[in-house]
Image (cartoon, rainbow, N blue to C red; front, side):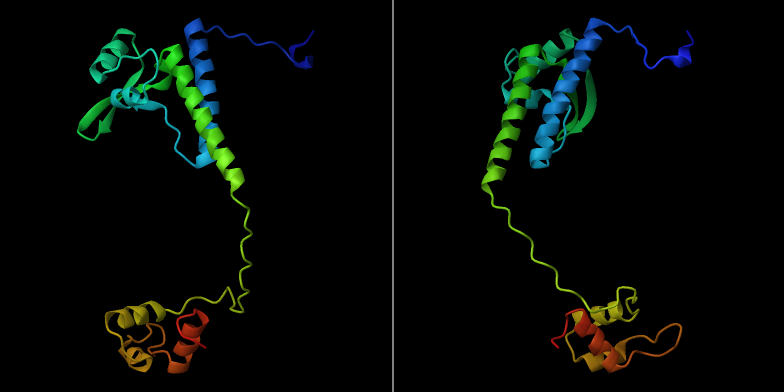
Length: 194
């Protein structure tokens, strides 16, 4: 039988039980985090400082930051050095947590996502108002004089005709816009009442 004639084939890869457990835990965590992120637009976190883990009060963890740091070092938790509020700090990867603490973290994420989902169902779906159609041509470029004019008017309120006289001449033509063109453009963009 030729290898290329087969519709499917089995693939086996050798990984340690610890690596498999870590991958399975990571998948469960990412599923829970995805539920949280899609529910409340939060950020996906994988690394936590000892102080953060203590504040979470997860079961099976020491209750002080120094105790947690010793525990993490003794159990060879995966860590990284990250900038903190008072210099650098160690952050631990979520897959390093003991099973009970890891399971509790997942349960909290899922509860939080469910609460956000339940609250979202209470909010009525309010349709957005239709945008008023614009009769301006979209391909029309913004005049080069508009931004300098706005700067002049912002610095010192004055009549538009006086502000137009303060505009520098156009580089290409050497002329300033006429007052009618300026008034029409300001009406189009809603800065002057029509």
